[in-house]
Image 1 (cartoon, helix red, strand yellow):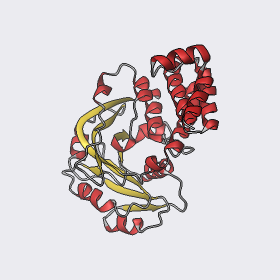
Image 2 (cartoon, one colour):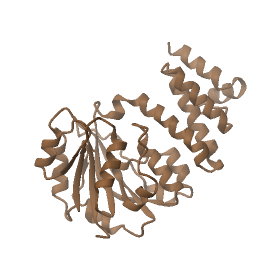
Image 3 (cartoon, helix red, strand yellow):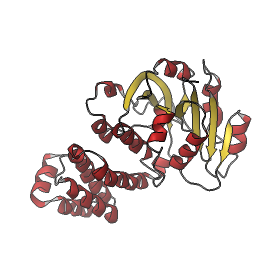
Length: 300
């Protein structure tokens, strides 16, 4: 049991994707300890398809989002190690075999490298996701403030996830990056598995594609927490990202979120944007708010 791995799959209207994912699950060279799906109140036949493929299914009574689903899956799992997987992605049939070879201690958590293709045209590689720099990172909180850690590429100790309370359930976007910041802040080390064990298939109907603004707004909620949660040495990096987020919000006419980003950025002491010489000198002289207003006018 010490090296057992559960694969936990949050699902929402995923019936068309599950059969291909389960080809990789069922072909594992070493089987998963268990396969559990959480149906997030789908309107299609996700439950029936998942059950026909051999998965245990937890049925949600209302749509609560991936963070809530993953926490319910975590509670139901009986293995010591957890792999969350998105229903619309694929998995290498050596995932368990290779994953078990990397177990070192309960303090180590893992992210594997990942292929990224267009779901509708798989000849198009959209830029792979790699975590090779993780193993040499001297400050992993800085790393995860600057780089997205995707939970669907992770392998986690159940004890570690329970220690930090799992995923934040008050957000529907940015829950993956937040998980990794909080894991590292709690003292866990995250390491890279260099093998490509997940294949991410991008498509325009995914939650992140359809709700990008919501994801960024949820990111602000996380940053607001980090101002008090993280060591003060990270304020500069947090402020840098808040300033950039404010620019994005104003460019897309989301003034309310833009003002919130500006207010939070000021708490970090960051008053400039350094994406170009112009942005740096303009914000240094006139401030972020005037720069945001200029962006908004230019994009009207």
